Image 1 (cartoon, rainbow, N blue to C red):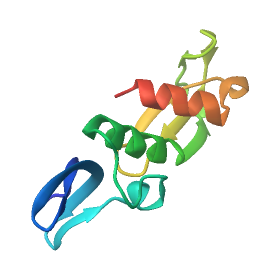
Image 2: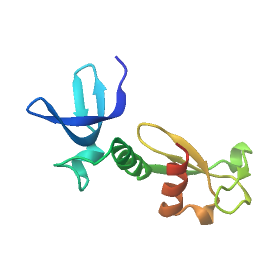
Image 3: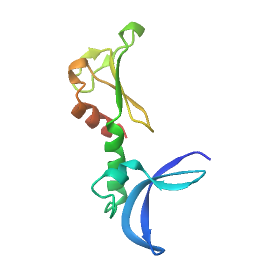
Image 4: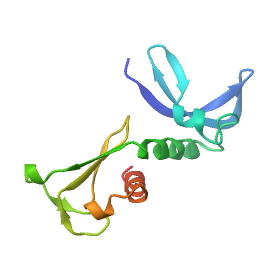
Length: 119
């Protein structure tokens, strides 16, 4: 069984609570994703499924690797400045995205913003 990532409504005593966590399901069961285990809404859940998805995206944006593709002769336009660059940032743990950013634009804030916009 493949892993499934999605927001699910929390239940208490078998009844829906109107609160949400981002979850993953695999062959062993369904679990609250670590993003919702560590956020401000860990105990009571998020108000909407969209809020739970945003929690997951913010969590994912914190994982990135910066690389330079100049040796591979791969260039593209920086999403932040528009200049031609070989700078490339791979973002995420579960859903990898590659974002073209020049060295000067590779700040955590820019990486997170462009990663969030890629969904």
